[in-house]
Length: 325
Length: 196
Image (cartoon, rainbow over all chains, first blue to last red; front, side, top):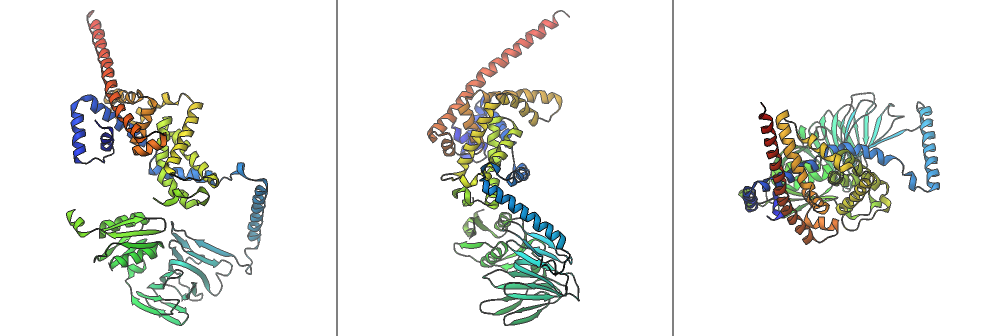
């Protein structure tokens, strides 16, 4: 018996011919069966050492381990500077603690997400913000309750603004300004990309260079900050609220359309390989991370994918292959 | 896999490190278990390894293969531990069977016996063969194992095939001893029956 074939059998990788060989070998004698049983048992007990769940649990342990300062290797001056930094931090913290009620001091609060996490934020006026990957929102806590509620957004977010006619809510993005009273709407304000704003409920006012427009529910505008061109279109409600519901919504999208949406959603470059055949996909996919989403899509729309550090490669399974399956 | 592995450690950030962790933590823990035979200890060693990896990332430069790097590191740590506590291996076997069985008492006993026998079987191999088998069971390829143990892939394959042959021979002798026991028992019970 070739050991490689046996181990491929244990890992359930063997093809039909190899499987037959192993089965024949097993039937040869009881001791062969014992060997396989012993190996399988050993595999089980090895695998019991750790799995995905325990890895997740241990990650917390490791993170605390990581955050302890690596004292041993530090140079003395570094230690002092660290101490100084901590002292300075404490001072500022204390100073903020004392001065916070003062209305004059700007107290900027910045909340940001990375490429790996999304956040749901509740602002002091109980407005809810769903912050998409690679986005940040900044506001001045000291003046937030003044005549205007002002926040600055970079990236993509869905707002559900608490209604307050006396205090309009203003979102400042790098290229546009949006004023609302109490609505929910979606903003996509990434650098070097068309700015998109869509409304779920209520009415909003969007101003930008050469633009001043009121938007109603299920309306969407796309504004190009370079050419100042604006296009408005209709958008279905569940597409607007997709971010809030943590869903990626597709409506009759072909592969470039899907790619564009994924690109926007994850802020990664999407490359399409092979000849784009005609596919059209309607449906929504729950966002449980890029791998889960791509896995779901590959199953639903017949797409193959490959994820690299900063890009995703999508390719259509050839038709012949799919028919064969 | 992300190309984190090819970078030097100084460029790691929390995210790339997490990717690395997700990719290899399970494997490293299992490999540590293969050495220590103690689940707790294995995971402790693995966790410690990753902590140190992060702390000393500035000095780490992996030019070939991060998987190999991690496994070599794990191996060294386990060896160190083993030198400190030479008893661990013997403790391990009891713990093993404990974890696996949840049957009624009777079948439990039977299973325990047969399982112990099977476990003993692999322990009869020499350490090199045993480690190669463990690595193979963890899903490494012959080439990876060869790289890790500083031998040629041919040698790994040879060792595996020999291991199976050795196991077949071992079983033969084990069955003999088992039969001896049974005969002994039968004679014993007969002797007990005679006076009554």
